[in-house]
Image (tube, rainbow, N blue to C red; front, side):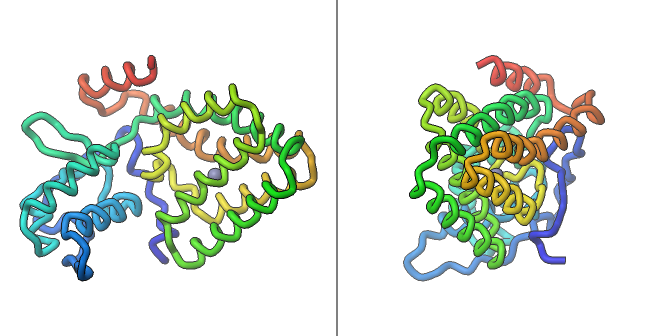
Length: 264
Ligand SMILES: [Zn+2]
């Protein structure tokens, strides 16, 4: 089984945070390329491990342990963790240090429900309005997506996935829809990057191909349905998680924060 086939879903509510052990991080000793800052390499290494779920949600990012395991001093690790916090992939807790972010299904489900309807509309409008140039651009994006999957470049795949959706949205040529979907993207982007529900890159590519086929065939209904199926693949898994973990294992503080975020 290659890492890209690993199907973990530890990012949702209800996961028990892992207890720290001496070798808890699936990271190797650092190999720093000449001319590259150590902190940048540490950041890239940790980000990659989080995206690949090799460091699970809820895990404490201990500066001394990581420095020891990566074979580096503490300050580049400290800097890298600060950047992970800025990006939303880790969360700082008062006097406890940083932890890999756990995403809450109850926060994400409403966002995915709305995203689903808006993406369906975007794809339907794109089927009516996309120029031949845009259709070629979408096709090139999907070739790049296939290549990224072939090369097992998961981070690149995530970027290409997002790019595909942005270009479909551009093709829909509706500024109001653009504004609404960009707002949703902003709020789910970290969860997307962290692959909160890893449906598998191959499945995503097959879904994107179905959307593009319908857009190229100028079939609005089929394009909308394909986009909806694609987004709901993640949405329905999140809903299932919410149903099974209704009593969330969350601190009162983080639950309050989540409520605030939804109300924004
Ligand atoms: Zn997608």
